[in-house]
Each structure stands twice: as structure tokens, then as C-alpha cells.
Amino acid sequence: MSEQEFGSTPPGPEINQEPVVEGSWGSTQTQTPPNGYTSAPPPGYTPPPPGYAPPPPGYSAQPLGAQGLSENSACALAYVTFIPALVFLLVAPYNQNPKIKFHAIQELGLSIIWACLGVIMIVPIIGWIIGIVGFLTLLGTWIMCIMKASQGGVLKLPVIGDFAAQQSGYRP
Image (cartoon, rainbow, N blue to C red; front, side, top):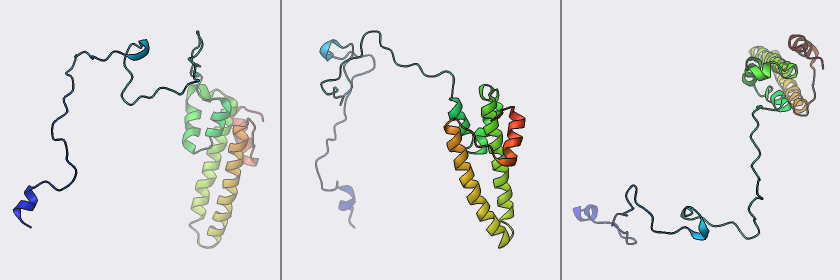
């Protein structure tokens, strides 16, 4: 390749090489805002279609809940992994609710069973069979627990549920 090919600009559309000059800091805008607004709308703004009326006088947006999660949401979220379950057992508004504590403790029991199934899977053939059947059973149980907790109910598991009820003080 020759020097001329490297030094010339490639063919194509003309590009404006002049820098764009904007107003300096603190300069005033010369545009007047439309329709009596206090500031001009941002560039590219399109107004809403006709038929959208402003809110009535005295209307205010709904305040955000200062309470945190609802009880059903916290109960269902406790089953996601062991991390939310531990958080709900340690954080003040949630660890005082017996129902949330029950679900969090029951999830910790399911996590322990999951870890034990992982150890059983180390054993060839029989461990694999037990592990796969156990994991599928655990998955179904886990999904049913989440569904019941999100609806406000409780799926009390045979051994883990009794222990969780005793520790949390919740009687399903």
C-alpha cells in the first residue's frame, strides 16, 4: 500500500468537521418556554396524545410503603435460597413475625436436605439414582412451598415443618 492511501480520507459522505459550539456555563437561553411552562421541554420531547387530562386538584401519588414487604411476599421470598431465609431471621421487622420465621426455618431445612443430596450423589450408581429422585422430589416440594406461601397458606413438611413450628412459635 502506498503512503497516499494511508494519508487520505476514505470515500464516503461528507462529514462536517466544524466543532459544535454550545452556550457556556451560566448563559441564558433565548428560547421562551411554550404554553406558559417554567422551562422548555427537553429536545426530542413529544407531548402526550389528546385525551390525557392533568390529574385533579389535590391529587397526590400513592406513598411508597414504609412497611417493607408484605407478609405473603416475605414468606414466599424466604424460599428462594437460604440467603433471604437468613436475612428474614436476622432483620428486625421480619424476625418478629412467627409465620415468616416458620417459612425461613423450613427453607433452611430444605437447603440442608439439598446439600445432603449433593453429598449422596458422590456415590456411583445408587447414589445417583437416590440423588436424582431426591432432587426432583425436593424441587416439587420447593415449588409447592413457594406457591402456598405466596397465597398466605402453609405447607408444613413432616419433620422439618414440626421443627420450624417449634422454633418459630407458629402453629399452622
